[in-house]
Amino acid sequence: MHAAAAPEDRVWDPQEKLPRESLAVLQLDRLRATAGRVLAAQELGAARLAAAGIAAAADIRTLADLAAVPFTTKADLRAAYPFGLLAVPREQLVRVHASSGTHGKPTVVGYTASDLEIWTELMARCMTMAGVQPGMVIHNANTYGLFTGGLGFHQGGERIGATVVPVSGGLTGRQAMLLRDLGAHVLVSTPSYALAIAQAVSDAGYEPADLRLELGLFGGEPWTEGMRAEIERQLGLSAVNFYGLSEMCGPGVAAECSRRDGLHVQEDHFLVEVVDPADGAPVPTGTAGELVFTTLTKEAMPLLRYRTGDVGTLVEAPCDCGRSTVRLTGLTGRHDDMLIVRGVNLYPSQVEHVLLRAGGAAPHYQIVVERPGPLDEVRLECEPADRSADLELLRARLEQQLQVHTGLRITVAVREPGTVPRSEGKAVRVVDRRITSADARAARTGSA
Ligand code: DLL
Image (tube, rainbow, N blue to C red; front, top):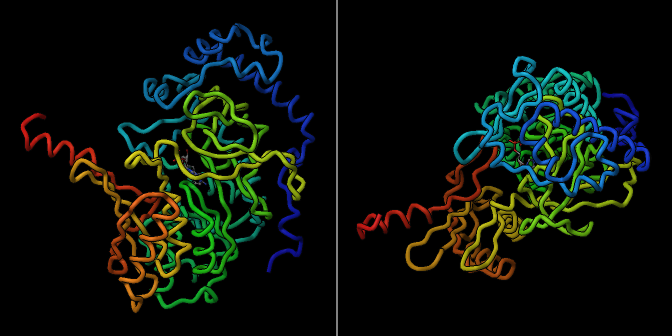
């Protein structure tokens, strides 16, 4: 057993509770230092600062001055691939990672020794906040490699003084065996891979009670409350949400405390804004919009007002846990994951929500979009929770509830259990065949 101290009372770094006035002073100080580094060594950032009339760090008088600086975008990172946004000589990098990059080249990010140290501390903070304690066994099933989810949690776990098992992703049957044999208290993975592991645990004939799991640290992709409940039920643990992106550091940008009521943003290292994705204008606090981050301590690749494409909402009300940082809620997905089907906006997470609330369906799904004729058609491929279920009834119920909750007619195909593709990392939720079907039509009519 572990020390009796209530995990929710443990804080890794007293700075997490800094009064907001002191936090603002620290942020301004760090923003100026960042601007100084950018002006000296990052051409693109320097041009963006110049566009806002900032020629020297001292020209930044208040945090609000940042609002005049043009955004940095994923396209800027692609154009600078691989090392064009470094603010230090390449030789000072001790590590590179990369974002998953579903379209074309990945986004490469670099770390100086100081960047790695700060990232490790942020992970120790967030993992402590989630309830990880020294001595716990952490089974890390995030992929080790360019993905920040592997090494990020590894570093944080070691820093706390936990025992890290670097299993990485894949060989899912073996994951179940190791979870049991090594007595893991903490599982780290993407939420979708946690379900694949849960399946392997059950296939191996283990019950959750045969495992010692207490906590699951999940992130890297959007997941709904329904998914959280399902993972908690299947694995007998308490599931905690972690958010982050390689461009900032990886995981460690925001995570939930024991209240599980929004993810605390590590604001002494990242300035967060929420803007209207259409025009970039700030939205009122409490309104959903696109998350924009500015790094405050990064040396290798500082980024000013980086547009993440992620949708979220900020909560400023103080949290019972005593941390002073703002919280992030409503992480429903990337703005560009939103499908526009017959003029209606559809996020995969809306479909997940309905699927898991309807009852009777397993938490594995894929959304297929096609354009067989003039109109888009959407099909939800899913599986029954129980082999003996009335599949026709399940299909009809899901179709009816999807229509009510999304306003779209979505056909449902209830497949044989085990046939919907499983992920070993980030799940592919949408298969968009519209482009290829249009290309195919064009090819058939000779107009390609
Ligand atoms: O996914 C970092 C990470 C790893 C975070 C493990 C948490 C846990 P990237 O591969 O660069 O980095 O992908 C970042 O993943 O912009 C979001 O679109 C999405 N994402 C990450 N965490 C969440 C989450 C890592 N908790 C991109 N909820 C981000 C929703 C998330 N989306």
